[in-house]
Length: 88
Image (cartoon, rainbow, N blue to C red; front, side, top):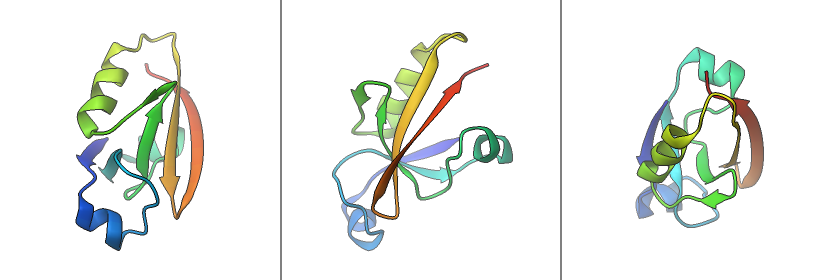
């Protein structure tokens, strides 16, 4: 999973509603299948923690244990979705 910081230009051109977050720039087939994230999705929250930058997402995922259910809230096409998964 590769993430980039949401730039002002991307926000305006990409139809993104909110501020901050991390944009998925590329992902593996496994991430798409198991987690449901796609390039262009904007991650806005990991579990109960809002994220402003790609580094926030990485830090929160690194802190999770293999038993923790992680909930990611993400924006796609001006709608917010969520997905739950466990890191293995």
